[in-house]
Image 1 (cartoon, rainbow over the protein chains, first blue to last red):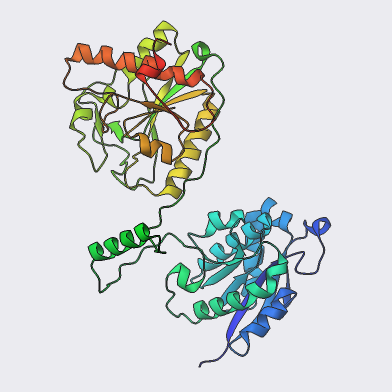
Image 2 (image 1 turned 135 degrees about the vertical axis):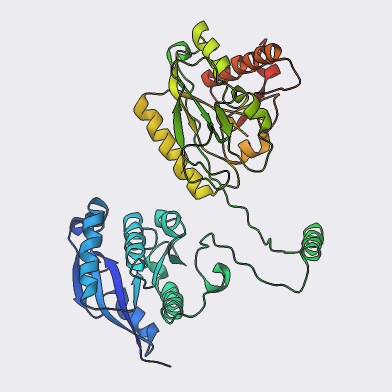
Length: 349
Length: 72
C-alpha cells in the first residue's frame, strides 16, 4: 500500500455547521481537515486516506451563482492539491445534490477523480450521473451511517485508480456506459435461459435494461387553431441538399431550422434525408412526404390553421441518445415558445 | 402532435397526441404507389384529419387514425 490519498470534501452550509435555510446564501469557504459528516467519513477511510480540507458553500449561493461558486471553490481546492474530491452525501436535497454534481464535474476537468453521494430522487442524479460517479443513499441524513461506509469504500477505490466495474456491482448509479466483455455462453443460450426463467416465474436479469422515458404532461388543446401559429417539425433528418450543417445520420447531437418562407412545397432535388437505418429514397423523391409543406400550406390558405411558422425544425431520430434527445427537445421547445408558436406537427420516422 | 406509422415507439416515449398515419414508416406522409396528384390529395386528407387532434383534450398518450377523426 502506498501513502494515504489526500481527499477534499464538499458539503453545504447545513452539514458544515454554518446554519440552515437562513444561511443558504453564504459564500464558499474552506476549513482544514474534516467537518461534520467528514469526521465520520474520515473514520471509514481509516489509514488509507486523509481528508485534508473541507469546502463549504450555501445551497442558494451555489445555484444562484454557479459559475462564481465553482471558480471560488476550485481556487480554494488549489491550496490543498488533493488527489480526490468527494461531495455530499446530499440525500434528497436538490440544490445540494446539484451543487455536488456540478462541482464534481468541474473538478474532474483537472484530470482528478470525484465521487458524489445522493438519493435516487435527487435531481442531481439525472443531471450528473452520466458524467460523475454517484453513490446511492437513503432519503435523509437518517441513512448517513448506511451511506458513509459504501461512499468511503467506493471513493477509495476510485481514488487509487483501480478499475471500476459495472454500476450494480460497484454501487453507483449507471452512467449509461456500455463495455464489451467476453462470456462463456453465447447470446442465444443466455436469451433462452432468460426466457425459460421468465416463463417459469424464476428471477432473471436482463442484460439490456431499457431506459424509462418518463412522462410528459399533455399540453392543453390549441384554443383557436384557425388563428394559431403552427410549426412543422421532423426527426426524419430532412435537410437542404448536401447537408450544409452536417446533421448526423444517427446519434444526432444537433437540430436545425430551415426557412420555408414563400415556399408552397419542398422541391425534389433541393432537400435530402440524412437518416440511417432506413431507405430515404422515397423522401428524397418528394420531401413533402416527410415534411408536408404542400398540404400544410393548403390548410393555412383554407384557414384550418392560422399561420405556418416560416421555418421547419429538424433533427435525426435514429439510434439516438435519450439524454441528447431530451436536450434537443427542450431547446426546440424553447425556440418555439420564443417565436410564439402554439402548435407543432411532428412527423416521426 | 406526432404523425407517425411507428405507434408503439411514439407511445413509449410519451408522445401525447399521436396520429396513426397510413403512410410508410420512413416517410409518414408519403405513398409512392399513387400518382403525384393523387398522393398530394391523400396527404392533404391525412394532415387535415391529423390537425384535429391539436384541438382535442387528451390525458395520456392517445392514438387516433383517419377513421377516428373524420366523420364524427
